[in-house]
Image 1 (cartoon, rainbow, N blue to C red):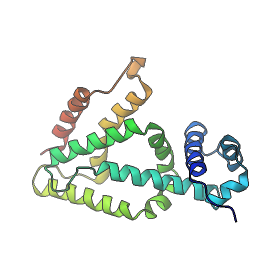
Image 2 (image 1 turned 90 degrees about the horizontal axis):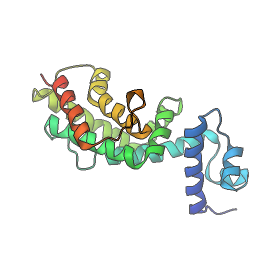
Image 3 (image 1 turned 90 degrees about the vertical axis):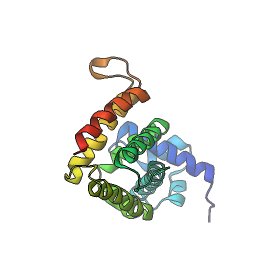
Length: 198
């Protein structure tokens, strides 16, 4: 039986992320991945049962890293404004530090793999619980207007992710050069808080 090689496994993960971000699911195959890694296809099957298993395991690694980064120095007991700002900072830092992983997860998030990945991560349930407690506290303390989860998410995080997309692309509307600064982020955050507060 062949032994797992940690460096090879890291290379496989890195190359799979690159290929899926660049070519999507349709352009991704175990054969192409093996060739890009200069390994045999059989070697891939030491690490993964099949293509779906590979995608789901990599998705779980990234999701766990994201959830852990998002709750860094965050507490559901924070005031709504302070907690949401910490969420913005954490999400922005993660996106800027790991742009390829974020692009990969965006593709995965809108695929049939999403539910399987999230169900496989115990920490996702913890993350969801913390975020629900945070929203409940904001409502109870009259710091947040009642709204559906989807409406809340789009108002609370939509502006941030729009700015992060422009930052990642390096351009704003009309192709103007753009780099996200803390000042611009704070300006958008101030508008977001006004929209969410009673």
